[in-house]
Length: 245
Image (cartoon, rainbow, N blue to C red; front, side):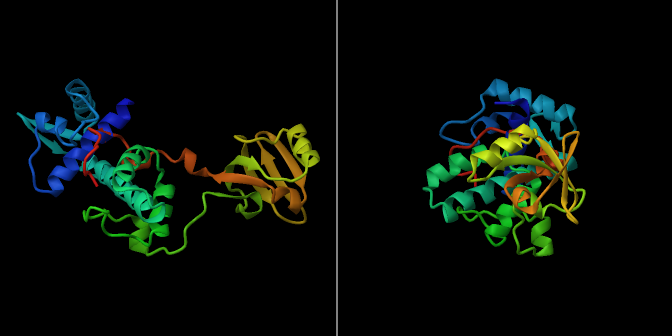
């Protein structure tokens, strides 16, 4: 487990404790997610040291407190976890235990845009499957109802919008071979320069003029991979195997 994820685990446990009006000390973090804590005592100590050094946690004797920055970061992690639980439970119809384990993994990977898309898809749920509140996000306050696709045909890019080639979709091997010969392949950065009178796209340092049919077969991932794990995306505490939702 990365140090960022360990920090997120610790911050998350502290946030949940505060939300439930419990005081949390170092030892109680180890027991925060029975039956098998994801972090051992040494990992918790390391995460707390990193969090304190980053100004996310303050220590007063045996008591631990979230700073304003730590609270914001922890809140985002809790939001991602509880939305992920809803996604696995309500949409994918996964059992409660598997939904919990899967949510624990995915919460550290969701970008801000992806998190909002999940929230919009689910209709801005207010509670997780365990009945615990889900912190609201920007999309909830704005009541955005239309999910923003993360992967789209390049024809749907906005002018000057940057993206990354996700995959090429074509039934013809000749066309795929032609795209490869032009240096267009998954993982390449792309920017739409213009749509008319012909599509102009910049792939890396190369600008190409392509017809609409070909551009429509180039699927791109919007620039969310470059968005820093949300201004509040550090990493928090001891992974939960029990109800953390």
